[in-house]
Picture (cartoon, rainbow, N blue to C red):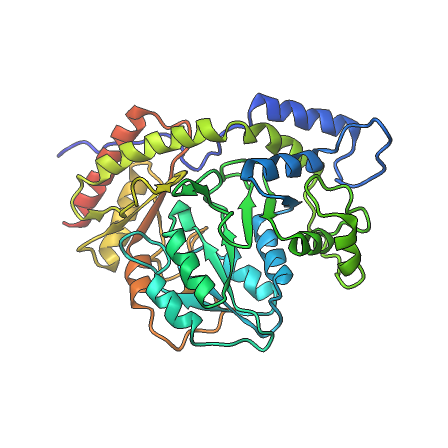
Amino acid sequence: MTEMTKFSKDLSKPDPIPESGIAEAIKIMKTGKLHRYGEIKSGSSMPEAMQLEKEFAEYMGLNYCVGVNSCGCSIFLALKAVGVQFGDQVLMNAFTLAPVPGAIAHCGAQPVLVEVDEKNYTICLKDLKKKAESFENPSGTKVLLLSHMRGHIVDMEELMKVCDELKVTVVEDCAHTMAASWNGRLTGTFGKIGCFSTQTFKHINSGEGGLLVTNDEDVAAKVILYSGSYMLYKQHGARPEEEVFKKWKSDIPNFSMRMSNLAAAVARPQLKMLKERSEAWMSKYLELESVFEKIENIKMPTRAKGKENFVPSSIQFLTENLGYQEMIKFQKGCAERGLTVKWFGHDDAIGFTSRYEHWGYVTKPDYEMPGTNGVMRRLFDMRIPMSMTDEDVELIGKVVEEAMHDAML
């Protein structure tokens, strides 16, 4: 009997905070000024949250940035700022994580699920157009909450053509695409608003946090007020002028969704590391892709080479010719060999992997979702830590191949 290959590295272990981030966190803790707002005396340094907003807006090439306490909150605030109201419907691609429909539910709205393209796991533009044409909201708003799920980027030029034609406002969920671009243009700059995450397993790790970017001064002012600035909105590093706030400050409730100075202090040094991290992730992704493509019954997604500059902190693939029990056996076989591979196809939601059938708070669609179902029930997902080595890639390939072989017996 062939000896079972074992993989010992824990892929779920976060990459460490860089020493520069630790130093900044200690410095801010010694001051006690973890809350982002307070008295700023003349000559004092700009608070960390203000500096991060200024630096991230400059990085994105946009006018405004607002730091909040999570990407999910940034999406909720984005939807509020563009006019989504209770009872509205919001378009969204069906392949995403639970905080995305959660943000829609937070607004008292309901998702209109758009199909997934099996070839590249992105939103189906044909289905988007069909569904965007088929409904009207009482509020008059029509919004697409576009999730660049797991870093897979749709043809953004074509998507914007569809949305512009149908007068659909685009909010981009870029939790998995910080530093990624389509045809040379950063994700988060195509729609009216871009929402980013600094949660532990994202491209910048501050434990939890969100960044919202836009060129719309009214959106920026409303989000700053919604996030809980009190009347201290001048303490934002990339904000509109005073006159814009005067239009809104009496009508906007405080939702207390602020980013802390501590989270910003940890995040700021990592902004300078995005290029290096992107290159490292891409190198490991391409190695894994090459290995997985050779394994029977595994199908890799197509990527738009030359246009889709993705930042792959994880890798996904579909299984072929496996039934439900065989897929359970395959995942279990990987786990027995020490490799954690997540699967979206379980009957029940497990960990981070859920699909639309699991979201009981979402009204079940009265339309068929064959494309989405065909993808989600066969979709496997694996994290790529920056510490992954060439030897790790080789071992992972052997583990996956052995587990697939056993699953087919």
